[in-house]
Image (cartoon, rainbow over all chains, first blue to last red; front, side, top):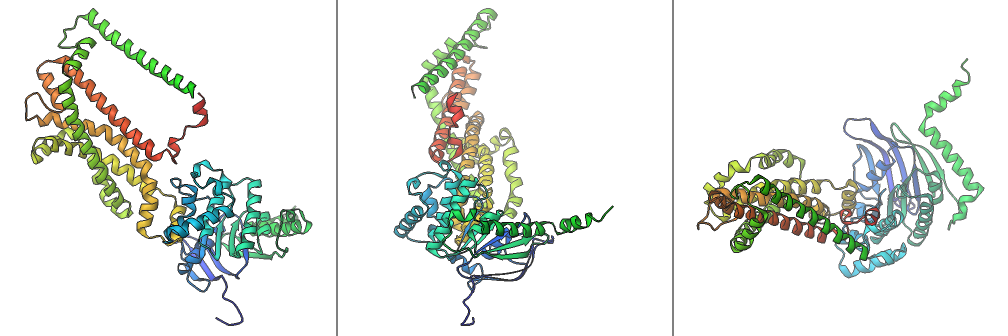
Length: 270
Length: 270
């Protein structure tokens, strides 16, 4: 550790990942996420962006290369990491507050502290009024909020989010995006966020990383330096649109470099 | 609310009307065909036998009920334990599943005499027969419930460094409860059948006094066909009682959270 440079939150060094004897899912991934960054991974299906999160969380091990989370191995770093899955992953037999308290319960936090932290997390996402309800009584957006509350109870310093809002309608998604920004401003965690949506990636992130498939690799990076706090109005600005266009182009090039090349040569054919 | 009560009353009235029509048809057939009473007694004679011999029917019900409940209870306890072992690894399942299948396919009529020979005729042996025949559905359904947990939920638990005991008791076991009840529902029906089959072979220490299976055989050899019918009626009632108790327990345990307990709006309307 050099004194002039803080330990990065995530450091992925030349990582390769293949399942069994198949083609590599990821190849030559190098990615450093500094503390306080909000990095979005965006790319077409099958580019391995969810696998990156699985690697950072230690749920799967790299075939080659190394990963450090705050200077630790991914498994040892789990205490400072929370994972938010694509679906809310709530336990249907537990009430909302029991679900939110699950992480603390598993980590052996005593009941009084658990109750207090659960209540404050529920307040944070505006769901105190459904604390005693069961998940089946909630809408998709509310379930996702419960999931976020659960992730925040353990005071994570790194939040891994795997397309958390993909199943929601656009209005619910926009509202939750704004909430994520607010929570981050209050709690100062670092985030790695996987998404399909260019607008969502730009709105939330300090940096957008574009992945290309077959095998999954990083094909482009964009710094997003819109000032914070960001508001919903940012989405309507010309600068936002301009950046969205550039990211979309990079995404299209990542998806089909052959097709893009073919389209160029097509014109010359008789 | 008033409407639902009214609808229920109409349902009950309909069922009663069908029942009355069947009895009438039965009586009519007797008048026309003049079948002797020892072949087919009249509904009236059956009702009379039921009332006159109510005390001995009750005794038989009690004996068979105890054997079935004992067998079923043992099935649930042993079945859940075996399922917990099966859920530990695919390897264990591959090794022992075929033998569990054997439990289900072996004809109980063939092994009932063996069990009686080994244990000695009596309620204990009959209970064991009820246990053997009702064990397989509990094992199969509970195992299925234990192993069909969503992978992301397992990952969620791992991210909080859950122990394997926590995974089992806070995730897999509660997740398996609805499947366990499916198993118990099937098992409860065949436990009664097992007990009655066992009694057919087991005989009784006192002439004329035994479980329903014994009494049915006794009534048959004495050509007391009206009593035989009354006993069959009692057997059916016992089956019903089992079914409703299990249904009630299932509702009691699951109605808070499980989808099966929710009345869909469309159904509630009609």
